Length: 256
Image 1 (spheres, rainbow, N blue to C red):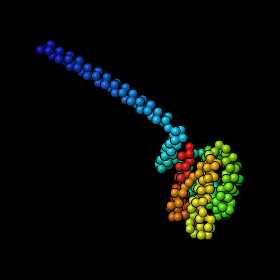
Image 2: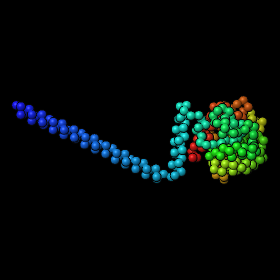
Image 3: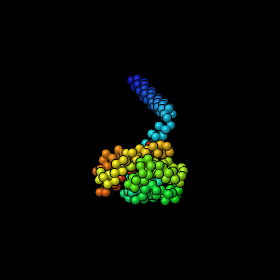
Image 4: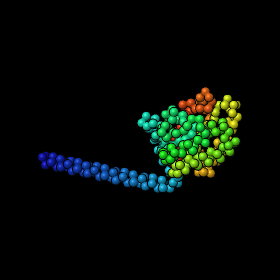
């Protein structure tokens, strides 16, 4: 009886050892298989990325970075200005409002209230000092009121010559030019040339194309702009300023 019991115990020990060894082998196989699958998946991902157009890949990465920054902003981890890479913004009172409402950094949003594009030479020293990677130019609302250039095409020609001066002050910068957003019907009644903003923007887009600048078309905001203007019918209310800034940030991010 004792011998039988010993043999039984011995068999159980061998079975336990065998089961344990089999379990270890199974774990090793799973680890190797998983690692192999990860390597395979990794290689497939690399091949997929390599097959993409470089411009498409760069744009996708820029959009991913912008989305991450927006998430950080929504969580209160960064200021809105941090959504823009190294930049300088010049322009009139609409652009200045982005700093006034603390949406953008006042040290980099150097727009001046009441000016038109003829003020750009006065900003060249500050642009030179900043040497931004991205130069955002946003004039037009006063230029149109003053009928600068006499027509949409004439204005674009004058504007172009001044932007070229700004671009020379920061030769490494990409240049972005914003579209001119709508004004109220009451303002158009007083200054009929504002009724031609569509033509002005078409000329600005063509101007950007021939100079390899980026035209930021924020025209989609016009659908809701009448309910988001200040009492003067020209300047943007705070909520619209933020939406406008978002369209600028998106354009700069997509161009990276």
